[in-house]
Image 1 (tube, helix red, strand yellow):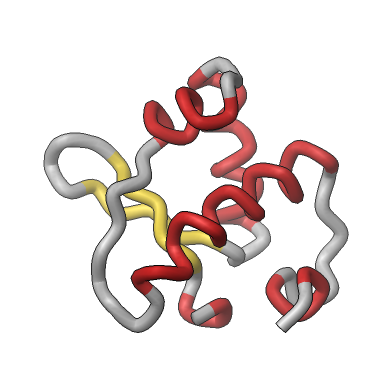
Image 2: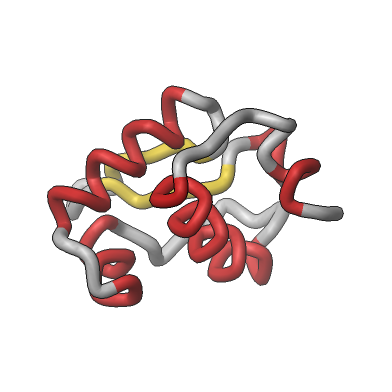
Length: 85
């Protein structure tokens, strides 16, 4: 599967593409499992970007239906959307 397949051909900004790649590389180990340890704080630490920037980019990826978020009571966790698993 290549990047175009994963994004369903949707146009992504450079920030969206870079963050989606990080999320995919972290989540591919848990495909078909209801597990995620990724939140905006973790992604900010991994990418050395401000949390506010990560939140905005994650929001864009949610709108494009590439990732979903779930509040586990401690904060939002980020998952690949069902179309990417």
